Each structure stands twice: as structure tokens, then as C-alpha cells.
Length: 69
Image 1 (spheres, rainbow, N blue to C red):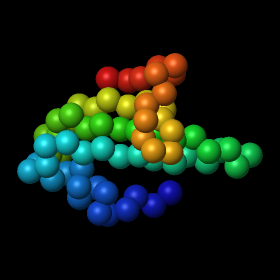
Image 2: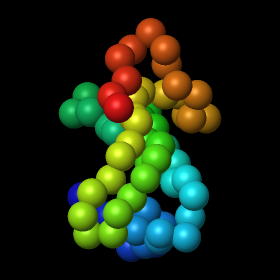
Image 3: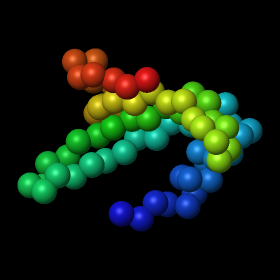
Image 4: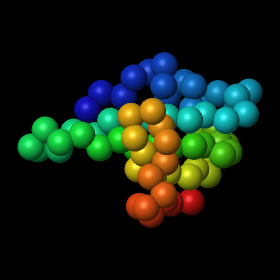
């Protein structure tokens, strides 16, 4: 999988207050699963804090499934 450079640069930009990514994962049978990552804080080349979980195509979190923090 190729990481888009513009997405990585947006995550690494310390001037942004929040970065939210909505990702599509496609399984071997063609099934689609959406995930959302909210980057809370990023220290360039050192660490990051994020909250993520499964969501729908619009980025609405699925509260019935677990989320990571």
C-alpha cells in the first residue's frame, strides 16, 4: 500500500490543531470497512496521541464497536 505524501505532511504539520483521517479498508472478499483516526497531539518524529475506531463512509463513529485511545 502506498501512503499518500500529502496525508503524511498534513499529519506531520505542527501548526494544525487537529487532523482527522477517514480510511477505507477492503477485505479479501471485497467487503468494505471504514475507520476514523483523530490525531489529538503530534510531536514531530517523536510521538503522537490519537483516538480511532470504526465508522461509516461519512466518518460517523460506530459506538457499538470498541475505540482505541
